[in-house]
Image (tube, rainbow, N blue to C red; front, side, top):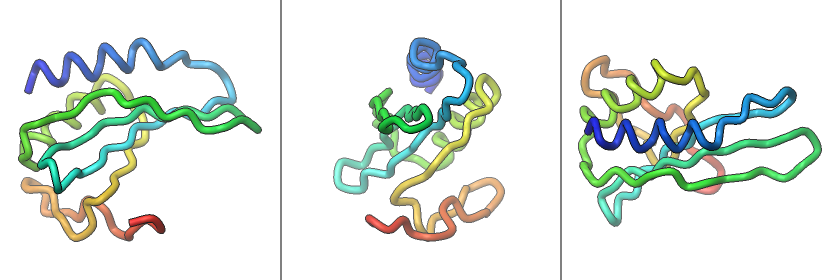
Length: 106
């Protein structure tokens, strides 16, 4: 898991330019078919198209480990995290819903 955290943070370092008027956020997708979690880095400048870059795939399919991994990422970067395909699932420690509403494409 520490290896996953190092890979994710090093790739965010390369992509996070800290330019003004640019929106940056992470997207975590739950791939139930392959039993993996996929991380994407998204950025968008005003009046330009959205850029989505795949960062890493976590093969350890456990919500508890994902929660600790995301805590480490959130400590390093205060980016917004968008969750996809997590509808109805809860975090193991806090028992809060991960995704409250389904996205329109789910």
